[in-house]
Image 1 (cartoon, rainbow, N blue to C red):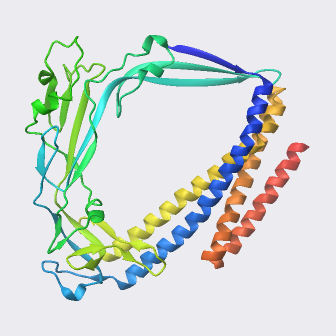
Image 2 (cartoon, rainbow, N blue to C red):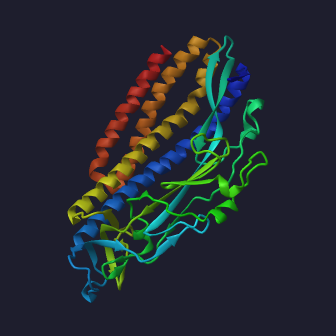
Image 3 (tube, rainbow, N blue to C red):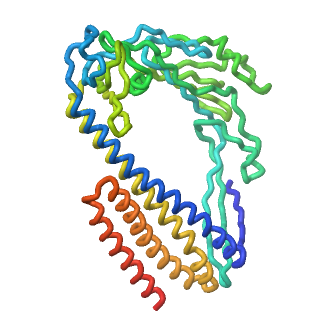
Amino acid sequence: MAYTEVTSKNWFQRLGESFGGIVAGFVIIALATWLLWWNEGRTFKTAGAIGEAELVTQDVSDISKIDPALEGKVIHAIGRAETKEILRDPVFGVEIQAINIEKSAEYYQWREHSHSETRKKLGGGEETVTTYTYEKEWSSSPVDSNSFKDPDYRGLNKTLANVDENTIWARDVTFGAYKLPEFLIHSIGGEVPMNLTSVDVNSVAKIIAAPKEYQASPDKLITVSGSTVYIGENPGSPQVGDVRVTFKYTPQAEVSIVAQVIRDTFEQFTASNGYSFSRLNMGKVGMAKMFEGARSENNMIAWLIRVSGVLLVVLGLRMIFKPLSVLGDVIPLLGTIIGAGMGVVAFLLGLAWSLIVIAVAWVRFRPLIAGALIVAALVLIYLSYSKGKKSEA
């Protein structure tokens, strides 16, 4: 059954909050400006490090023995990442020879979901109707039901066990005659479900806190199936408090690396601009393709941060302009029209400001392209000014 909560704010409360948001808006714009500036420097310097590394990297086909001639050289090589270590989870007792073991847990819990609708009222007030619904779901962490809005659902959640999620990594991983350092080991992917053949039931039973209403002893609440250890009375019919723990592992595999040789291991290549570069790909990947992938990844990160920066600037400007729409909300339709107009202006100004920041950064890092961005920014400022004049009319 849904639970409904109605909250109201009068015009003066909304106006006070909107003026308070102006300071937060300027802070957001300042942070977004720094983010955009930092990102352009990061992108340029990372690209420089990738290019510099590519110029000095040499292809090595034989890694079966340590070659003193490769000392200090940046190499591209293909080989198997192997280990003799047997990894073991100390609580569940599962073990396997692998690069890593990853343990994750899910809890069957009541979850609260909310949906809000806000209505403007004549005179500038605002009424918000929030509807809360509750469902039993698997959650990645225990849910505190004591904070639920509906009193009927408070305190209903419990857990039979609290399981610490972790990943256990092999420390001794070889790559031909060489040893892989930790940063390359942690780059190895290809996780697969672990087939659990045995679990230390007595050890697992010690972490189970079964309430009195459970008839079975803790060790009888443990079911093993495939890659999952289920803690509860019936895996086919989960109850609130049940826990399922899943194990995955990363098997030994063929990998391709680009890194600098240091004695019998590797380290990252440090470019002249101070940025570091190394790379590990799964499978057999040629040197040219690895560097192409590194450049594509750098560009993708750059665009994600640029878009995020622009959106943050627009958000900050909308917060600064918010009092104008709240003032107009004395007549709801007028406030909506003003808000829509200010939204367009905030977007145009936010995009223009972002382009100016990027252009100024490029004057330092990429001066030949900066001019075009400055022209585009000026056009956007003019469009936003024109939009503002039309709104006033």
